Image 1 (cartoon, rainbow over the protein chains, first blue to last red):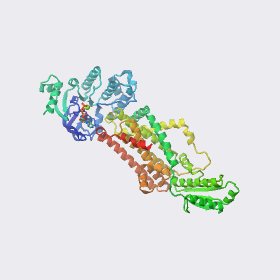
Image 2 (cartoon, rainbow over the protein chains, first blue to last red):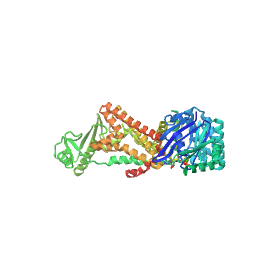
Image 3 (tube, rainbow over the protein chains, first blue to last red):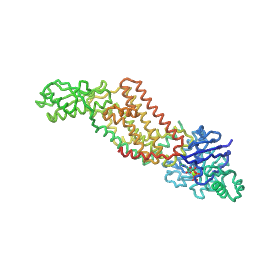
Image 4 (cartoon, rainbow over the protein chains, first blue to last red):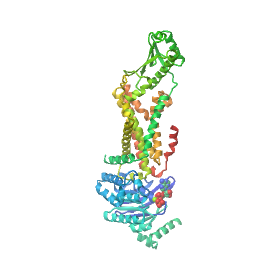
Length: 246
Length: 386
Ligand SMILES: Nc1ncnc2c1ncn2[C@@H]1O[C@H](COP(=O)(O)OP(=O)(O)OP(=O)(O)O)[C@@H](O)[C@H]1O
Ligand SMILES: [Mg+2]
């Protein structure tokens, strides 16, 4: 059974159709990349998958559960990192991680302590973890949120531009972590990104989305071959052009 | 229960540590005196009538009655306010030995502030009459409600009610004002710090999210109130009325209905504040909006305490305001109509269920993600209110 099954997904914001019927499947244990230019509809897709808002048309299933009718079941399996997010300003990083660990432990029966300790390790904030979140830099907050997302070892992690705002070292480390996590614990990861290097390193398969339509999908190798390109960046530019100019 | 408790603890910690909530502590300090200011200052031109029992039938008693009539008071046999002029009244004035008048007030129910007002008007006129004839002229009050007699001035009646039988609803009311500020702030903080999106994808039910905020806000406001009470020594003032003025006895059932009604209204106020503040973008506008919600629900109480009548289309509107329902439950229970009293409570429960459902719907429908609605624009209304 695929972990994600999306068919003919459509979504509008008022009169603007952000998604015009996209379909894709994601296998369990896979790292799947959604790439596309600004405003293509990546975040919109991820929000729908994260049960934040219902789609207008089409079917979306996560692990066989309908995203609308069975949203509470879906929420136990996923962990979502929004594109722009924060943590509770007046809590310390440690308190924030504990809050989330408690919630997941309560809902799924997983071991709270294990998740919490994994979170502390993933965050890598050292003693700063005991400071209030409002004293953190942007990158520190991002690391805390990433740790929060991954520590619960979800069936499906939904990461919207996970490394945005992180420096090279941290971004590198996080990518390694995500990959390792997926391999070792069988976590499926859906990730959106602008960074083609990142996507090429991380993803088993990618889909290129442009103006609410998926224009290409396949493994990075397949796509490079098809477009006779050196790297994904070239594929991305050519595929997007092809749509833009007919 | 588990997830609600987790949510409750997180929210309480978050709001207790937020400095901006000091505003939430200050606003009620303005709002409450304002409310009582309105109650105290309102002067209605509604016709005041009085029943006169003239046991004196002398020169001065007739002058007094004429004086009252000249000042627009109707002498009416069926008025709930009775002025008893004792025998020998005129003689006492002539010999300057401070005579005593008795003003007896029969309240149809403990919340019959209209009659209390009338008695106050009569008293004012009697004093004016006295200042022209004999300054030491005294009047004594007897306020009768459902069998118990209270010897207090009409102006003291409301405060003796609030110190006595209505103390529980009063405390609930103050807690409610603080709590609805806190709940609005708590929601706005989720939006401001961009945690709401994550929260809505965590494995926790919408209902627990909402109730976690409601209960933590109640806990917050109880803490605030307790600390205020200690620092202002409010407890010493609220201590049992010690002056020998008789005490007002209201039977238990109506009070129970009133307290339960006030509590339900209180939860409704919190739910509404929560719902509205979902559409604000920052803590400050959320606090103002919560103030507005409070006023909407408090209009009936203000109208009632000011002694205005509740008739005509306005009256009907005020009576359908859930803010009136606890009073309705109380009055029905006083009149022995428990069916109606229960109905009033059910009405409030329905309102609560409706607003809770609406809030859950707002979360599920995704309007918070797709639409930009900024209720912060309504802040101008709050400014007018002030
Ligand atoms: N809340 C909203 N209200 C109105 N329009 C929106 C809203 N959110 C997104 N859109 C529009 O929907 C389209 C898709 O947006 P989306 O955020 O999914 O793009 P994206 O691929 O994530 O872009 P980026 O790379 O910049 O993050 C855009 O045209 C955007 O303007
Ligand atoms: Mg995006």
